[in-house]
Image 1 (cartoon, one colour):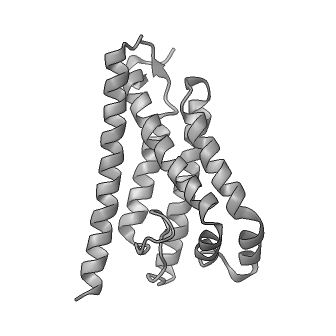
Image 2 (image 1 turned 45 degrees about the horizontal axis):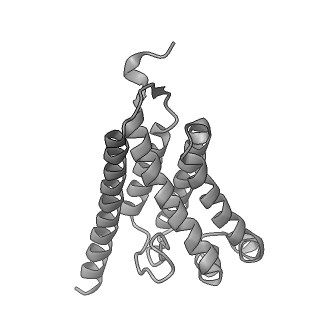
Length: 184
């Protein structure tokens, strides 16, 4: 028996799942729509011997996996496993960025907001990815059983929209901060 304090209210679970699903659909679609740009971008993060593998074989599968994770986050039956997969992938991206920062490579684009984004890897992006991985992990908690009304579902969708806006706002703040630092 799980203590009530460890149960995730269903309205919160739907909101968090909607937010993380949105994030993964957007990321996956960027990779599928712009494979050449993402191949080049991602290859910069890898050691030289692994770069051809990424360019030749991994962009499409990673994009498809991201979209599959997004879809698996929506039904409660698959949400826990998808949440763990999402958290692992977000943490891996954060670790790849942190590794580049440790190597002194602060000139790499993140690619988080699409191939045209000029946002560079930074400690702020590492923290953002780790926080988002933590949000995804919350979805692995057991659900508090409750019947949601239409108003509850609407509330969950509004909460998901708020989280999307918060994420996009953070992305813009990081971008603006970097742009202002470069223009000094």
